[in-house]
Image (cartoon, rainbow, N blue to C red; front, top):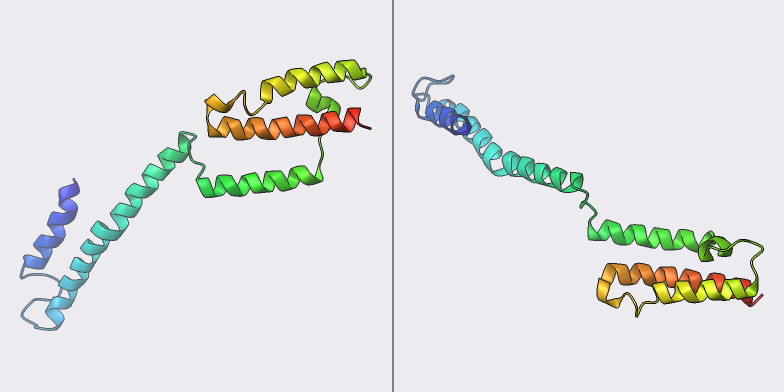
Length: 148
């Protein structure tokens, strides 16, 4: 089927019987040039763009479709949003509102040991960055509750 898309225009150009006969020197070649131009457009412009769009669509459907630029832009927006909306320190540490200072300290130590950047260094860059952000949230929540 694909070869018909190429075969038919080429046969049209080579055939002496077309819309404008080739014996009209200037006018007879116009329709042939239009057909050759359409064939060039299909092969070098339309078809590669269609293949690229299909591969990108499959890439995004597999769940891997976040480009690095958009991912970094989203990270910056998330950081800006976090600055203006501070999370509840009790929820960050996972303690009740009536928790004693000793409970808060022990929970802080457990979470700090779990999310410390040195503890997750072997997991890779993405996990290290996430753990670093979580660790900073835990520290801020602890300072807000204990240092008050």
